[in-house]
Image (cartoon, protein in one colour):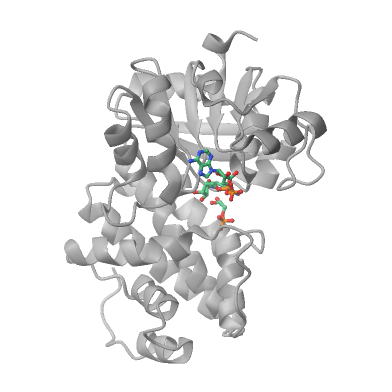
Length: 326
Ligand SMILES: NC(=O)c1ccc[n+]([C@@H]2O[C@H](COP(=O)([O-])OP(=O)(O)OC[C@H]3O[C@@H](n4cnc5c(N)ncnc54)[C@H](O)[C@@H]3O)[C@@H](O)[C@H]2O)c1
Ligand SMILES: O=P(O)(O)OC[C@H](O)CO
């Protein structure tokens, strides 16, 4: 393996490992950084990740417990949870060559700062070229080579298109754009809205209510996106509407499953990451700071913080004044 020609993946959870599989399938060598020496040794020995049962890691995937090794790659994919991105990027910063493309693959907004994923990278690694990859794709589907399509955004179109060529294959199909903000807002907001859709299902409110909630959810995602300068076509594309549809309807979605448990009156299992739980409070703060009305997201945040009961939140949404559709 020539590290300088490979793709580095930081964060060897479900998605980082799945991306490593996709990149290997595209014919590239991969350096997958696994945090913790023991974890790295175990993955090296088994060629499996317990988060992706039944998936065997391709020989092109080199597993390493040393960040400096993965940092030699030509392109870096950051696949940690959103709230861990800063910590991971800051550790990586001194090891990275200038102008290395660093692609955020997490979906969220940083708590406290309201920074989007590429902004966190820009602050933590000022000499990197940030980009973002997001869209409707479950780690398990990606790892198994089922067909998926995502959006890859960088401010520089040449860079975005170059990254698509490096990472894409017939089964993992990235579309490129320069609308970075549009892509990161879609991925962050859809997780919060998926929790809401899950609550609707868990409460047995019916398929009509699920469709209505998803559609009104898209309306508020798009409102916030436009207020933050995103393009409408991106918001209605794979990383916005596409991912919203997937996450508001599939039991594979951890955010949707988290919402279903809440809707049933159960305590959601905390063994799987549901990013929407962490994004909800910061999403509504961001919306408030821009005077954007996000009633569904507000309801999710209020339920999660214990400010309202689920029944009161549903009652609140259903008794809002009638208005024109927009
Ligand atoms: N799982 C999916 O289907 C999927 C699909 C698309 C996007 N995503 C996004 O990818 C991100 C990660 O999700 P996941 O499903 O892989 O979560 P996960 O919980 O399976 O894995 C997260 C991994 O990040 C690692 N990590 C945490 N902090 C780190 C650090 N500082 N340095 C290095 N590694 C660190 C953890 O050890 C863990 O292995 C989330 O933002 C999620 O929304 C996930
Ligand atoms: O399991 P979720 O809810 O984190 O969704 C995974 C991906 O984001 C779907 O595109």
